[in-house]
Image 1 (spheres, rainbow, N blue to C red):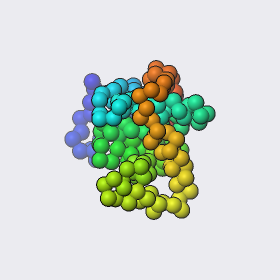
Image 2 (cartoon, helix red, strand yellow; image 1 turned 60 degrees about the vertical axis):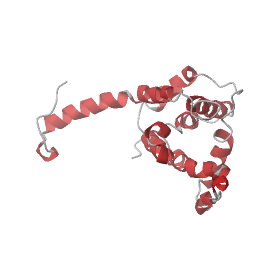
Image 3 (cartoon, helix red, strand yellow; image 1 turned 120 degrees about the vertical axis):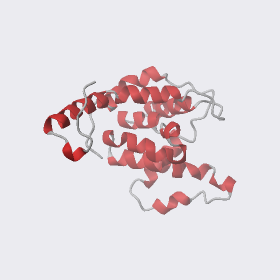
Image 4 (tube, rainbow, N blue to C red; image 1 turned 180 degrees about the vertical axis):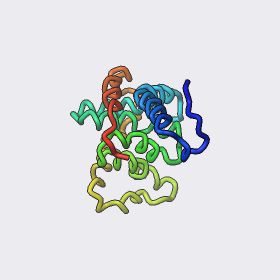
Length: 183
């Protein structure tokens, strides 16, 4: 692979930055493949009755069957990919991966879903299950409550018949085709 000659960015030439832009464009074109690989890597036991991949498939399948738009469906599919990269802040990582490709609303929902999901279990650890209420006045508070209620907390059912990952692959490819400009 061709590479630049500089060792400090301040010394780069226009031609070198054009080369880097070409390389980055190729990397961006591989985002769908990367996301699909992350999802496939989540097909391992985790302590739940299903794998994280199956959880993601259930989430996306429920959203699709409920008539949610494609951005929402793919966000459901990818909402926990942060688990494999950064379990301590998986929501923020998943949201950061999706941010260039989703609306600000969807970004906010995914970024905060971990805290909102805590409603279902924090009380078992002596924590405030209503910690999400600090965002009660936010315009997407209820959307995030609904996301967790309808497409996250209920997606651990070993008897639920999800669509396979291949069903969602064309959607994932369209999702990552072109960044929307959010950074």
